[in-house]
Image (cartoon, rainbow, N blue to C red; front, side, top):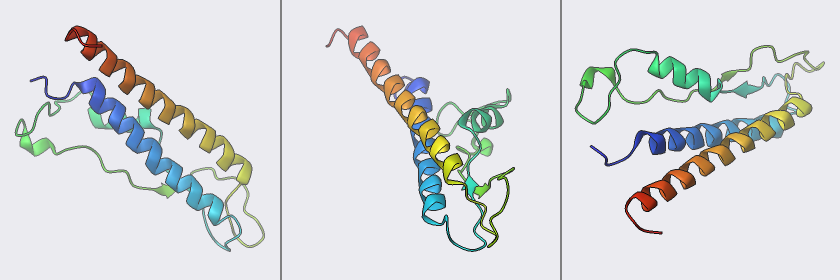
Length: 129
């Protein structure tokens, strides 16, 4: 029942989302001069989490409601509203990518803080430091 508290699963999912998004941003920056390249991104974690949870039934442990499946996979898509294209058809804005990179760093730091504090609380409840 308490093998892995949900808050730890949520923090782990947030960190995985941030890592995937950072990879996409790095790819966008690397292809900033590639003709015809379009910037790619993931939806925000909050949107992904709401879509996955959705207020419906959810699987709380393996084997429970097996037809619901596991977590939603993270697939990249072209960024909506990417702005104006350069003359060679490239849709990457380095300024936008730097702002997105700062957002991803904030998400990753938050995931690490949640994970660390949750472990501290668990250790305190067990009487360990």
